[in-house]
Length: 178
Image 1 (tube, rainbow, N blue to C red):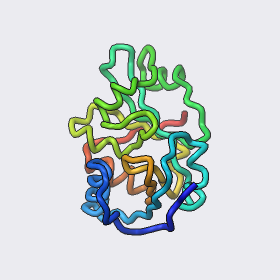
Image 2: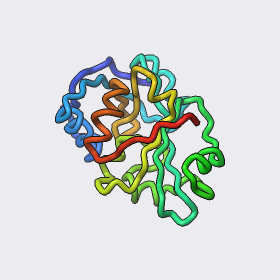
Image 3: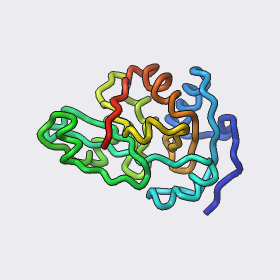
């Protein structure tokens, strides 16, 4: 798999709208990041080499919703952690949750299942999606994810995600032990 050298600046070539906005927002908030470009990846297994290159685990992102599709959750987990929907539903005090369809994901965060990322929150200015972070992720020094395209991955301090990036976008993350 192709993985570039680690870079510390935004790409100079044309990128997608969300990815471009991610770099602009990180710069606006003065959040330093590192990034690599890579071949397209769609599974957590394919991200292992990228994690090693960045020195930070690429986090798993799941988008789920209640049965009525009135409550949406963007859940961030360690790469190897299994998502327990029953436990999650009870913690969120809802009867049941299921994975959001590709169509619903596109509607609420502008991304599809193979490219899900917390960066999709930039597409949710009204705060309709609740961000939920597993405590193991919140406690880690580094956070790594794709910036809205699964051909690039970035890393920055987890504290900056929780204390700066998400609050600046009017999203207060809920941190729970899943």
